Image (cartoon, rainbow, N blue to C red; front, side):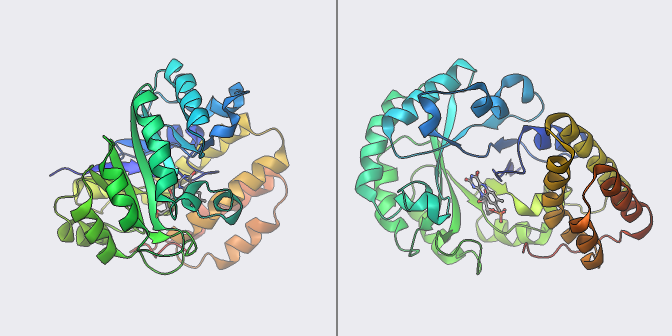
Length: 324
Ligand SMILES: Cc1cc2nc3c(=O)[nH]c(=O)nc-3n(C[C@H](O)[C@H](O)[C@H](O)COP(=O)(O)O)c2cc1C
């Protein structure tokens, strides 16, 4: 069974600029779920709120918009606007762990409230111009919360449920609870996609052997660290010629693209620094590099330092580590 691979939404990283540059250099992903947009913007929706989703920015990798919110009316209004852009599949974020979001009963903050989720779905599912999928964690506080939600999810014709088997309060600590994932898989009626901590071909092999009925897999941080990962999963082969050269060219293309969209040099350098939290994990001994990049202020110094790294210092780390 050929797996369908989804690029995970990683706010601040896997935006349209990244997705387009990524697809120029790497294969393997069938589609992406875009980082969330908030439905509270639906009343005065401006171009900048949906810029990431404009069809002309998404010609290379098919994308599903993701919305975060708890008001059915706002959600429906937002999907109608997105439908005007040509979208007919929407994803609801029930996973965001950040306390500021969760406290307002959005993202993973809704998971302890099955009745609220039921009321939301009963209004939204029949009224949106397309299909709905859900991306969820196992709960906010406990990984048993999901078992009060599954009967609710099963009542609706959801396109799929993408499960990241951690709780919200866990953030990214610990390991995904794949035993609970297995119980969910047995109980959920909609198709289920697995998401969480796939950073190596061997992670995928282990999980796909354990869950042979799962044919949809979402990968986030593992792909940011190792952009060859999705292609290696598709081919079953982790050998790539000139990995470092390809990574270097990809990096430079990303830098150039960001130069166009970021408003100033500091913004540009800060944006690229964020990526190095992940990129650095693909290589051996990057402690010093990361410290030096952190200190850089202007784009030319940044580029010079990174070029020296790719041309003279970079050693591919194999296998890739677990995401920090
Ligand atoms: C920096 C960052 C931003 C994220 N932004 C989103 C988001 O916008 N929407 C969402 O559903 N999940 C978001 N996530 C969660 C990821 O999509 C994914 O579920 C999580 O990282 C686990 O998968 P992974 O181990 O393959 O990265 C984010 C995660 C990180 C680390």
